[in-house]
Length: 126
Image (cartoon, rainbow, N blue to C red; front, side, top):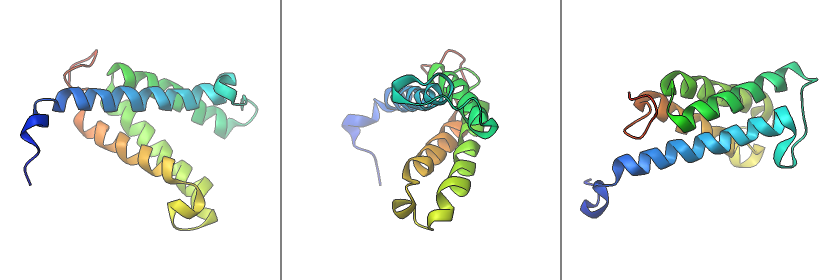
């Protein structure tokens, strides 16, 4: 199936928007854990949550900027897979039932970004 001709010229802009927005939102999750920002709670006393906060904040910023995008997105994707299977999967198999939809979506969005790199509008060209 061919993409709509009227939209095909915007592919690089749409990809940059996907990368920037998902990186920004991911970094916000990390800021919640590390700094208690956006109504979150600092989780510095819990080594697992501290690690998650560092990955989410650091990789989110790198993905947003398009700097070391492949490796940052791969790490972020892996963290979300671990988060899903350790925090959500024990509550049920289906993400809609166990509250893991966001972890699954982030996992696959970041896996896609890891395979594609920073793209045309990145600080570091792929």
